[in-house]
Length: 102
Image (tube, rainbow, N blue to C red; front, side):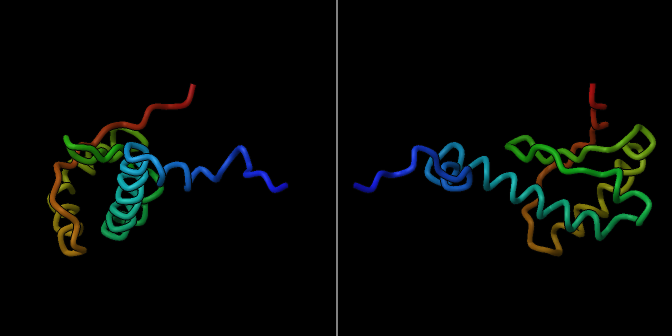
């Protein structure tokens, strides 16, 4: 007698649930946006910039510190152009300083 496993891969569980599937889609898009942004950034900034939440209010970029956040805010128009050139819909970019781990 063959039994189905009680657990299933996370990716499969996310895809099977509409709400979680939407979350997975937004996470993938956020990561794809970050890849475009990294290519548009000076090499020294790339390691300090991380993707954040992508939701109905916009997309959050997380900066490693306040100096990086200030530079990112200046670069937002250029980043919007880079994203648009790759076919991403325009959404507001909000820059935040990444919280330090406790």
